[in-house]
Image (cartoon, rainbow, N blue to C red):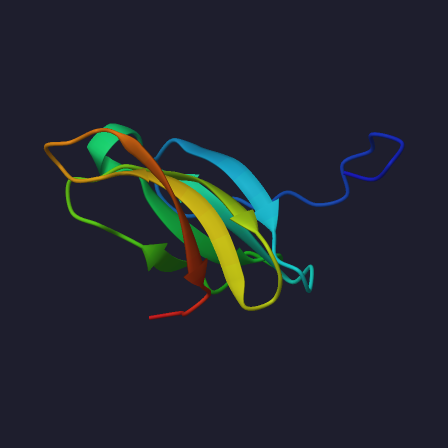
Length: 98
């Protein structure tokens, strides 16, 4: 969306999942987002042309959400401590594509 509120481009990741919390990477070429909900929520990175949809955080049974880009090498996100402890924690992670 531009500053006037006009939608310029829509990116739709594949699958029928809840998708939310998008955040552009520092270079503006990709978007970080959360997909799924609850214990099935994971973080992904997708290119702005819709290609290259790649998981960047997938802890089994643990919700990851709210990815926020810091710079071209790292990002912040929240997640549960574990599948049995749903206390939220904030992580700073390097952007590494698996």
